Picture 1 (spheres, helix red, strand yellow):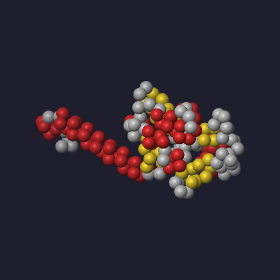
Picture 2: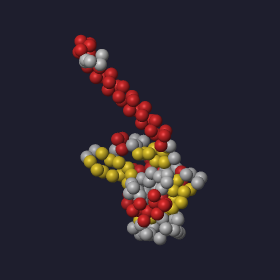
Picture 3: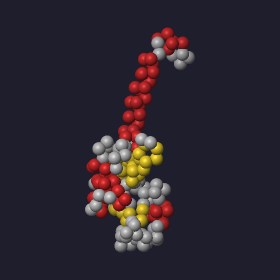
Picture 4: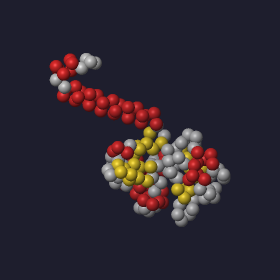
Length: 170
């Protein structure tokens, strides 16, 4: 399982950041969240978090083995006892989802809140969901097929019967 983000329905409210920081750090502070809402274009917001890569580049480069897979939940965690704050994991993450905590200097990343991610629970639009990549892909395909079918129907309805007969593919 992993967090799947659907930026097309994200409103940019940043409630996910508040829920994350409260669950993991005990404070409402977006700067301490393990998920970040990126605002790249007007009206386009994209939550960014760990993708729980398989294999994980961050774990591969960690010199102390501080990043390990939690077998019970199948997600990656960082051991604060083993982390030496070298930053190699930050550099290795292709998504920029790992940061060094400003106060502790320990690497932090999403660990799915040990299997019950707060960001998923509090996302009002369901732009952030927990699921298997295959399930989410199938859902997106079904949604796209519905949208395409509706658009095709609307297009065909807008064209008169005479015009349709003149088209080569009819």
